[in-house]
Figure 1 (cartoon, rainbow, N blue to C red):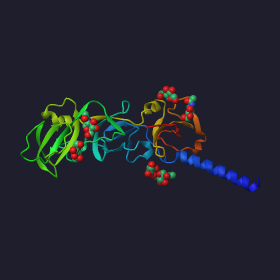
Figure 2: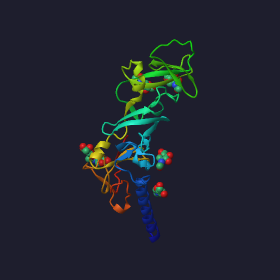
Figure 3: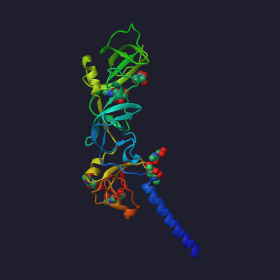
Figure 4: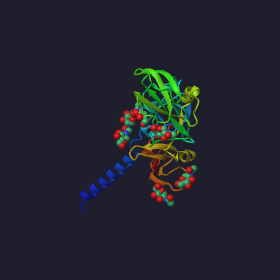
Length: 271
Ligand SMILES: *[C@@H]1O[C@H](CO)[C@@H](O)[C@H](O)[C@H]1NC(C)=O
Ligand SMILES: *[C@@H]1O[C@H](CO)[C@@H](O)[C@H](O)[C@H]1NC(C)=O
Ligand SMILES: *[C@@H]1O[C@H](CO)[C@@H](O)[C@H](O)[C@H]1NC(C)=O
Ligand SMILES: *[C@@H]1O[C@H](CO)[C@@H](O)[C@H](O)[C@H]1NC(C)=O
Ligand SMILES: *[C@@H]1O[C@H](CO)[C@@H](O)[C@H](O)[C@H]1NC(C)=O
Ligand SMILES: *[C@@H]1O[C@H](CO)[C@@H](O)[C@H](O)[C@H]1NC(C)=O
């Protein structure tokens, strides 16, 4: 083998090594807080991130809009929700449609639909339907009628149990209320309390956090992983004995946490 081809092989190896290193850490640019506040809620963590945080700090679909004096908001299926509570341990999120916080009537004429890839309803909810733009001759059925005025339609609105299509009316808006809802005089209160969903991603994050790590989102693989302090290793959590090191030089690491975590474990799991 000539000197030249050996040199070429060494160069190639170096190139491949660098490529692998950079791809393992690609997309992790900037630091994430272990726990953060957003609006009036504190102690928030993965899978949530604030809009201004680097993308790897949260799972896609969990971006929060923060406004110092108000509750955070989140967009689900193109509709804005106010966040009433976040339980990181139980993975439960309580939300209310922002357009129904101050109004018994939905202002946006769209159904409440959650993204089932990310969320499930927690306890038992039933649906009710608001029928807008009904003919004045309509029989008052179901929970009765309420007065609403939206930009589009201003007329009595029928409130019915269950999922109802518009029928003779112009449009119907379906939204969940707790099972057993019977008393129309409590409609406003029940709607303002919103509903709970359980998020389905990052299930092993509590183990990662307990072990001193911080969950991160790997945009290349679409997976959640546990970033651990110290040398980079593959792990589901930081206390596992099965640590596969993927990089040992701290100088090759990037600072991904606000605290002094240096490198990232790339052990990953689905969700
Ligand atoms: C990291 O982010 C900063 C600011 O957002 C940007 O200026 C820089 O180019 C980014 N670096 C890489 C490698 O993407
Ligand atoms: C309410 O409707 C949504 C979608 O329209 C559906 O996913 C959900 O299962 C319904 N809930 C009940 C209790 O039927
Ligand atoms: C809401 O869902 C009902 C039942 O699926 C449907 O008939 C109605 O058109 C939907 N409303 C809107 C505004 O999409
Ligand atoms: C960490 O992961 C190991 C398996 O890799 C598991 O046995 C252990 O229970 C986990 N620890 C925590 C705190 O989740
Ligand atoms: C994340 O991955 C998607 C494709 O899977 C790509 O379109 C997007 O630009 C990536 N985002 C970042 C911040 O790298
Ligand atoms: C250790 O982790 C590696 C990478 O995640 C995995 O391939 C291997 O099966 C694990 N070994 C044991 C004994 O759990």
